[in-house]
Amino acid sequence: MGIISKIISFILYFLLFSVALIVILHFVFGFQYVVILTDSMQPEINPTDLVVTRPVSPDELHVGEVVLYRVEIGNATYKITHRIVGMKTDSSGRFYYVTKGDNRNYTDPWRVYPEQVIGKVALVIPKVGVVWYYTPLIVFGLFLVVIASLAYDLAWLLLEEEPIRPKSRKADLLVLRRKKIKVYHYKH
Image (cartoon, rainbow, N blue to C red):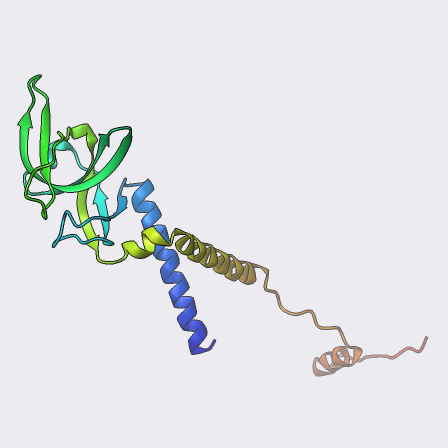
């Protein structure tokens, strides 16, 4: 195996491992992946950064933590990543969070109730959001290439057999002579 094929194989296996890790973290542990589109969280989180959030219970959240939450504005639901700057109770006694973007001079005009919180920011990966958001077909295509490559490798390993060599009478005679077995030739 040449050096180039080893490098390609390593890259493909790394991509497969990465995709598997992303899928497992999402479906098994509830992690969410969000691309930041605005500058509201600069300088800590920039546009095109990929944010990874993990699910949390409301009692784990404190002032100063960055969370991902859903908010309805008009007829649309948005996912927003902002910092918790306060915790309050409304007139009916329901607890809610006050949030604000780091790059804003004002708090958000809505209340964020615990059931709206999707998760707490666990990791920020700079600039990866460009690939994640703007070229999902390329990511999916890479995933398919990796899967196809691994399926090919697996099929090759499972189906590979010793090549069948045509039997030669001469070869058989040599084996028999080595074993000192007398061979009689009959003419038909």
